[in-house]
Amino acid sequence: DTEVTQTPKHLVMGMTNKKSLKCEQHMGHRAMYWYKQKAKKPPELMFVYSYEKLSINESVPSRFSPECPNSSLLNLHLHALQPEDSALYLCASSQLTSAFSSRDTQYFGPGTRLTVL
Amino acid sequence: LAKTTQPISMDSYEGQEVNITCSHNNIATNDYITWYQQFPSQGPRFIIQGYKTKVTNEVASLFIPADRKSSTLSLPRVSLSDTAVYYCLVGDMNNNAGNMLTFGGGTRLMVKP
Image (cartoon, rainbow over all chains, first blue to last red):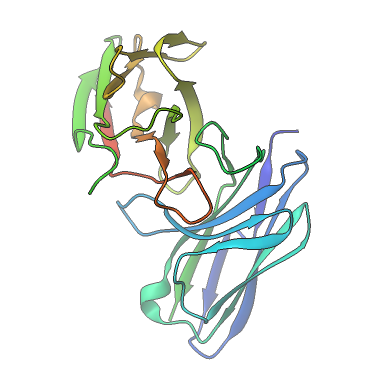
């Protein structure tokens, strides 16, 4: 199984709502990632978890709150978002060598298309 | 300072070979070069990875010269379904967790009938 799944596929929310994005992989990968991608732009790294611990937070606003309940699951909790947060949110996972390596291939999910009204 | 530089866009026709070159002048000794393909509203998909010389798999070839300051992704006999954005990635030692991958601008390939 080389699949990363993400739910929901689409999400529309108001600026006062609280919602969560979910990501799951069963490849035994110990690194998991959240990316944000705006239209016609490359993916931008938001968070990285390694061995269920937050390793990287790329100065992401606190209205985005990641959570890694176990090695297979990754959540992104959303609260009080702004319209400019509308984007495709991608989850990825990879094997983890002793440290992050450019040799570690990332497997991406299909993404969640988020629209903030 | 950009880690990688690629052409913004390229056009081709069905059946042709397409070569996309990526410049990575500051590549580190232990960096691998990885290419991903992305269709609209989908996650990037791994195509090929290499360290030096030539790598070939069922979908593409990757050519890396001895100085490793550039690499060329070669797609043989493209079809309409190869229309996508292609990203070249190398490591980014500036990341505080180690040698993470950072996406560059990508090359938007349009294959025409």
